[in-house]
Image (cartoon, rainbow, N blue to C red; front, side, top):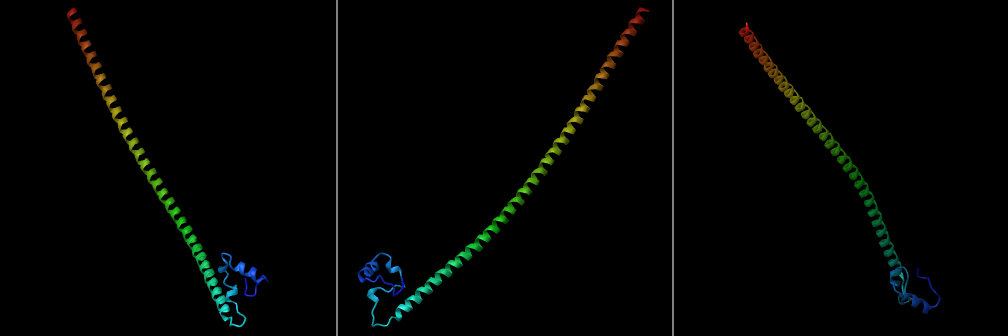
Length: 153
């Protein structure tokens, strides 16, 4: 409300001035402060002071808004960098796991190959022993038959 704003009825104006929150209208001049003969330069100074305070508040809001925008931007950049780092570490870990799996698979295959060779050697030796035993049994059988025929003749 401005200084000259009025409700035309002084009783109504005084009632409005008495309402809660009326003190938060710094540009309005209350009836108690009005005087027709006195110098009202203080009213103008109060308006200027109020305007400066309002400008400071607006500048502060703009500054906070700029800061929040830059902070949001830096937070977003930080988040992107963190996601990239996480992806990179995950890919390194995945690659390392794959390499370990390959090493394990190679060890398993090598061990299986060794076991296969060992089993082949063992089976081969057993086959040799069995042939040798069969050959010895055959030779014994031949010797017995030879001795039997010699006695019979």
